[in-house]
Image (cartoon, rainbow, N blue to C red; front, side, top):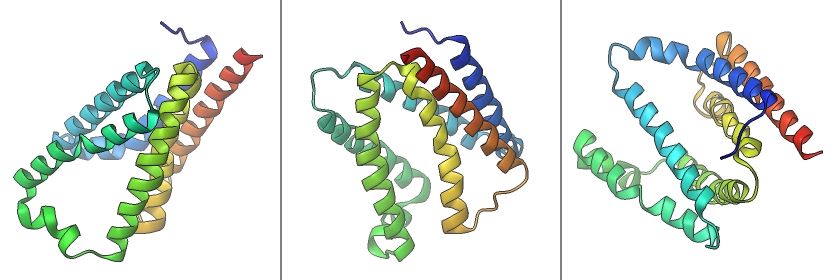
Length: 182
């Protein structure tokens, strides 16, 4: 029942424009094999459902909610990995670990899952969604920086334009939230 003001809508519109610039090359090549695109939309739906759970989790330990949110996806994802890749690929990161694999696992579990979701859930439970929502749009920008740093993913041209537009939209949304607080 929260209504965004015109500034928040402008910021979100700018962010969506920037995200479209970021994902255009991926979507253009994914149209021949739409499975990845479908999975991306399902991820967005899952993120929205998780935000609703965090938003409505009043009076319970946010740590407990985060722990369950970390545990529950393990089983369907393991089953999907088993069906798609087979048991040898599913267990390879555990049986034959690499230092990059451990680094990715540590980064994914500790700061992103546990700390990130704990902070995110607390923010969603405490503040209006329009005030915290724009911050989540930084995720693709940060992911591209990590991809460029860790696996030499090229980030230039249109991607830099997309990142800049998303950052501008997030700044506009945060500016709108700060104006509303005054």
